[in-house]
Length: 292
Ligand code: RIB
Image 1 (cartoon, helix red, strand yellow):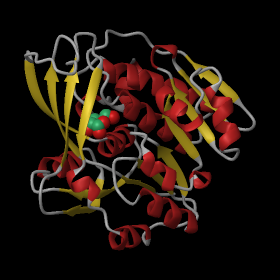
Image 2 (tube, rainbow, N blue to C red):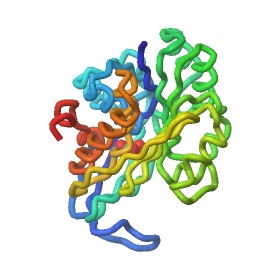
Image 3 (cartoon, rainbow, N blue to C red):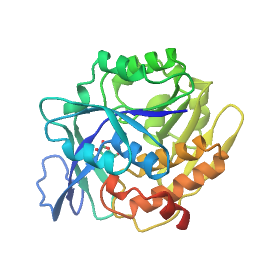
Image 4 (cartoon, protein in one colour):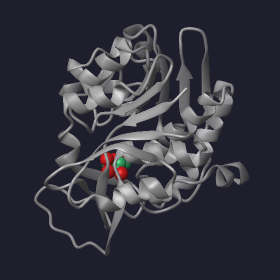
């Protein structure tokens, strides 16, 4: 079984601030740093550091060479990443004194996916192979439909949640990895305790992983349900904590390990990630997770 992640690669411009700037307010930043990021790239790095051979597909812009190099340095297969004209996708991220963030996204190269490239990439994969998706690239609906026709196992992290997802046939998704905000946007239910049930009602064939910040995470499908607490650490930067969770959870599932073990491993990995600055830079290796 092969694993393909078709997703974004961003350059994250990160500003350390006392508090997240409010509308009409101007504040000074104490520090600025540039990190590789993007939900797609972060999840591919997390899968690779968790020991999974992964192919990444997508597009980088003229300033995106360092993202390709980072993928290669981590053993991510980059043969399906195209180079495009113009700027790479990027973000402006504020991180406050509690490690909380807010993210402004510019799509750039990530919004230049073509149906021809999607068809060409998917032609290298077959029934039973896994496709990992987030919502930072265009043609997500087309990706889901074509992958489903091939019998691929589709994993969706519907983040960031927006109207484009309404065009997607989410009944074709096998695994959903969502946080409580996305779960509310998908179901209208604001109580995280009730969200897994509402998600299952909406998509009865799905398997759901719900991350709930300091309240831990939940897994639910039509047969079973589990809860996992967080591992408490000093939070420096929560960016990519969810992506780290996704990569390590999927890695454990791909190894055929029980769901509670997968949740535990993912919780350890994301605890390490929040204790470090940056997005993909904060993702631990499998050895670090085992020793945590
Ligand atoms: O999930 C974190 C990621 O979201 C950041 O790396 C940023 O690029 C945004 O895509």
